[in-house]
Image (cartoon, rainbow over all chains, first blue to last red):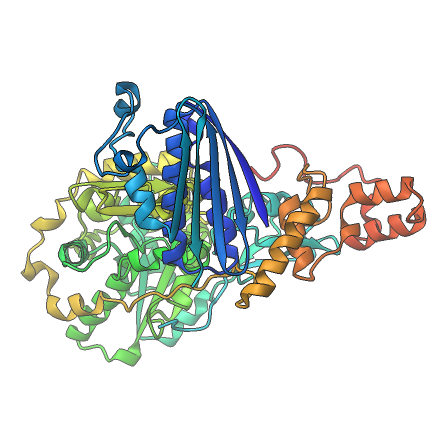
Length: 137
Length: 459
């Protein structure tokens, strides 16, 4: 099954909606709690990244018997140096975003920790695509 | 560990039910469906919160209780009631009048359950201080919240506080006290006065315990009537203060919102009202709540002052209790001599076993089949109108779709789809009408000027 959500850049009030919805589906499928928690954390962080940095984006969630694939595509400034962005504590978030409690430079490292596969592609000035895969036990 | 079989106190009187869907719409766990014009409770999903009881315009919901005459079987007849009961009586009625009336009804001992609350406070503090305690600790005071977590938030069961509620404390305390007076255990009858359906269920089949310690349960509204009658007839007003010697300010306030939370952890929160509790648990499950030590959660708005078996207005009840509390000492000021029994014995009894999850919303244990069902639900939803009217007998379109894949409903239950099919000539009008009659009862569409279930009825 496939679920899609639009993400609006700058709208922190709605961040967390897709991850919460996906969680409900996974619970009904009887996926174990630990796996669900990792997925929810990773998806939430990825959503917040789109909200905090991009202009708009889309989350496409594909679920089958064995795994969940989460694809987040955004139109935004892109990431110039992905390796640098993956470092804990590295952040380019604006003061405004940090004041709201986001942008501590833990987003991508946290995603890495909570996913089985992570692929980031980015083009400066165009946007970023994050693909995350988690396998069910 | 699962204790006794799950007991449900809430029942529906079919003769009174008019199938108005108020209960179905207000149920926070989607446990009610209307079948053949009558509401039916799914006991797996029901958490006994009583929101249905509150919303019913015909009082079709009732709560089973024991016959009060049962107390006659015992030599020592103990009434255990939560402090909140005092708060619902009109201001002019004194504590002594209420206690004296209870003695006149036939009880020999009167115990407000929140005493000696110090023992419970200390026991919970000890639990919170243990190294391996997962935080935030969620209180097990409200049985509806415990069942909700078992059913719907299985991962959070490990956060549940493994300590008993005040009614257990008081039950054990009463037994120990009476044994000291020379009573044999068989001679003691404990009768618990409940403010709600959830507490009854937890007394009859306690979660995390093997057996119930109480001999009978009496509904608070029933006892309210009996006490009021005696008082109105000019009943006695004796000095009963000796029966309250271990009652404290903190005990009186315990069942109100923040009554527990104010004692624990450097950071604690109190959430009341079922919908607030659900929203908060969703957040907690999403790992969006950090640094909280203790969570008090109660199903009713204003906690037990809003219990469905209370008579007074919940805000007035809170106000009276808050003023009453000021006249009592602090919990920690109660000393060993006052308690009069071996507190170590009571402390041991306050511990409960781990509470297991009982997920009821999953589509079976086979993942391939569950996936299949989930896909079907998604497809069915594409065709449903999304109006959530309830005319199918399910609370919303999503619930109807889930019922369909679980074999409990069919496409033609949706009145809008039926209408469309009639227009397309796929179903005959007569057949469609009979479908409706089947769902809502033969006489449903007859004119009736005394029809119940109007606006604000049942609120």
